[in-house]
Length: 248
Picture 1 (cartoon, rainbow, N blue to C red):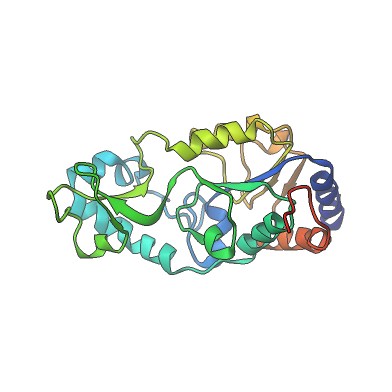
Picture 2 (picture 1 turned 90 degrees about the horizontal axis):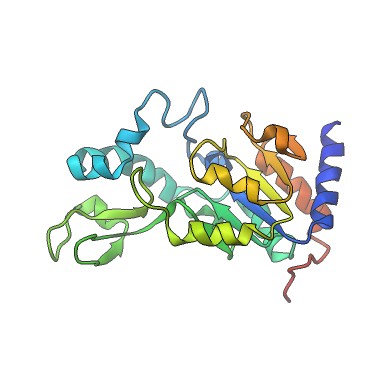
């Protein structure tokens, strides 16, 4: 099956499905200049002990080292702009073909592109907070000082670190997926637990990712092309037709 035939088949699957959701990962944002985590050549975590660097234990043990490392790439996330992937998914939601997006990304680019129904299963970079007194601050506070101005405790971002429990959005996403007829898996290697178990809750799935995933053999279709290209081509077929979730 060539590329155009696969696009036609995906359009058919979306039209046929009663409920379509997207699950996005770091690969959805690489075209915005944000490196992904696990690709062989440019992955952010290549050769690094990620469980140590991005854990709650690392933050508590040496907050200066933790923030020296993470603030550099968080700045890239906060300064990035949405790409074709984000805009295409937002368009599919606006025209009623996509119920919503489950995202592992903390960069906020789906919101910037106009997506409204989101479940951020790994948290976000909009704010940080004090675990001791509960005070919340804009994320930029961490560039000035990582200590709470009220009680002196170590501030932390609203991001899920290794060793953290999953947030409410994750469990809501599990429930939403129980009715999912088609899941678009976009830019994720599906290696991180427990998010990598979510596809089993969908009836069907299509994978758009440059690298192989453990779920490829279970997918209806697998695209190795750019997610921006694939999703933009999909919107060309669907954007002029109101989908089942279209609201005027």
